[in-house]
Length: 164
Image 1 (cartoon, rainbow, N blue to C red):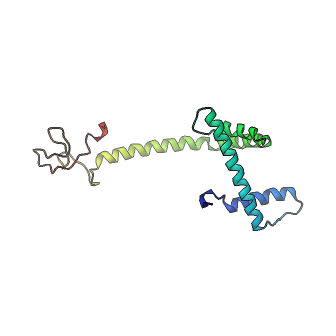
Image 2: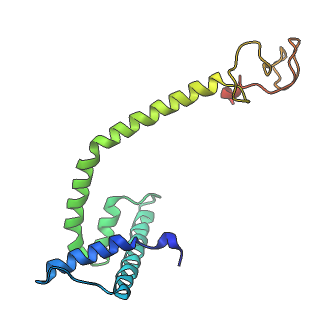
């Protein structure tokens, strides 16, 4: 199967060892490589099954994006209701922890767009500063790419592209 679909082995090993250590009196438990592979494959199958069920629920609601409620309903449908409460708690904790980050990231993206637009307006097609009278201005006729009376060489201009 594709490597992109594989779960990270180190994380699978850590989760398995943490869970087994809480179930056992013996502190350090060693897990065979084949057992870790079986846990990984089982988790992958569960994720695919839950995803497909949540996708079906989403499509029934005539939406294209799966949300958390779809996953909770999928857990109910697949009779894994014991996971709903811990999952809701984890989701709430995650949202609280990342609430401030979302605002910061959104502001950062807006600033980048503004900078990019400003930079694009200042540069010609060749990446050089664009000044009035440079080559590439549209002709007096309004057609781009045709030489004007000002010695234009027929290069298309950046001006007017924003209207399209």
